[in-house]
Image (cartoon, rainbow, N blue to C red):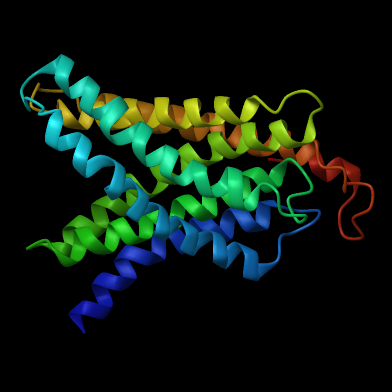
Length: 240
């Protein structure tokens, strides 16, 4: 019974966020099978992360009490590697798919991949902790929405990259934005040994959420399917 509870705590937050994003795709929703595949690609991205990060960490030791070395740890050794691992699957597996046919789809697929990563990571955390329930509850309000927020920012730029002529390089902006916010979020947690600085992580998360809401609204309004939707009027595209 405890195992089931821990699994629920690990996976339920991502399921709720994933459903929220899926329903925000108002005008031409993605095939469920492809969304589910995206989730499992996110699980696979954790393996890519390990393959890249384990050898790098062997050669780049980090002093846990050094502010500068923790910046390298947060932005390069964690954030960039993790976001690049997700980016690989979104950009080169899902991006070419014919169903990726409006800007908002970048957000849907990036979030689905990211939630697969976060869900698997959550399982490892809660199953290998002496207080898995507390860890699961804490991550429900921090790490899981953070991963989704990073993904919305990545997906926003990937959507623009595919659907705006001459803007394919925007895909790399997406990777950069996700890594930047992920790095800032992690950095303030990593240096929480300095009293009060952990609040920077919360500030980074809140800022990311606000930007994500704006990104979602902008891509809803940019959908080429607004006028073709039988259930929504064009005015509804202006709603957040």
